[in-house]
Image (tube, rainbow over all chains, first blue to last red):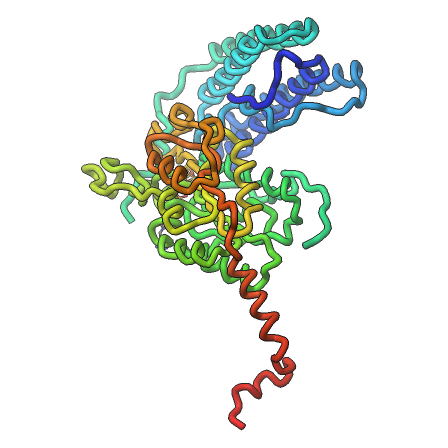
Length: 174
Length: 291
Ligand SMILES: Cc1ncc(C[n+]2csc(CCOP(=O)(O)OP(=O)(O)O)c2C)c(N)n1
Ligand code: SF4
Ligand SMILES: [Mg+2]
């Protein structure tokens, strides 16, 4: 999780909303990539879960984008994708071949925790009351998402006891 | 060169689905390349992307550029041939640490001394990934693999020092710990007029060691700009490059402030000069016939 060039003290509500949309977009894309990787490796359960996460992120992003356009219309954006990295998106190496649904959910849970930490860390630097309120709302949503995923995890039957290593061919000297 | 028109990262993404292991660092490298190419803005058909053999060498196929997944260790001579045949193309070469520094290691020096205008991206995972986890030239000493049951006895190659010592005009390092930084570094490498080398620490999640995964890389990464490094200072770059393996310095180590002429440019000049007195093409065989 990294950011660059964000001046939290002068962040306007428009910029904050745009930033939030970018964060959701990035997460959506990563989940879509993960789903495609799982499909490629014949791991349909994890693929379905990652697609669901991508849809959730897309829905959330659309809601934020609608708020932005109702408040600020087509005013140009001042923030770019380069300013954020892996805020709510799982890390590139969080996917694994033959992930169980439990492992996939754990990867998503880690991303929600990461996003929560981002909003918590940014809050003290914010000056604008509207931006503060937005970040608090987003922080609380991450708590809500974390609880949802944790509840879903609890419903899952335990993993088979096989590790992903069991599916990997033994290395051979060439 | 064609007129500039707006390209987006997705315009460089092909329909082919990568078959890399889920989580492989190379997924981030291809994203970095899409972004860099979009920033450069050349149409995909004006880009030739050559690789050798290895997991990483599959990368050209995942782009919309003309791709050539060639022969193990031979991406550079092939890329060089393409650049000489058509200097207007933007030529990229890529591959793994094994491809670049074992079997293909001998080629690097020659592209550097000629200053071929080619960008060479090495996805350094300190292992032979494709062939399932044998020692590579950048594997750390002591590393156990299926070809080093009791631990490697060799010191690793230092790719950064290797190319700096041969006189490369542009040398940089990137990693998936900072995608925007990686894209910017690749873009800068492509814009450099001459041979540009980017070493990308790209973790192999299947055969790589724990310390070389993203978390481990984050723990040792330091940004060269933040360190106040002057990329025009070659000796300072060599000093920093000594830490390869212990620290992960990200950004540009060296950018020659006065790039030498490129070989492809010199060849073009010579062709123009000699073709003034050359006989017309239809009489060219006369040159070989004794009068
Ligand atoms: C001439 C030749 N020798 C050996 C091989 C076997 N081989 C294929 S890929 C490879 C090494 C791959 O390692 P690297 O270049 O680091 O790429 P990675 O798979 O790690 O991305 C080897 C030894 C080959 N294909 N051709
Ligand atoms: S074996 Fe390693 S380098 Fe090859 S695709 Fe898998 S993770 Fe990537
Ligand atoms: Mg390798």
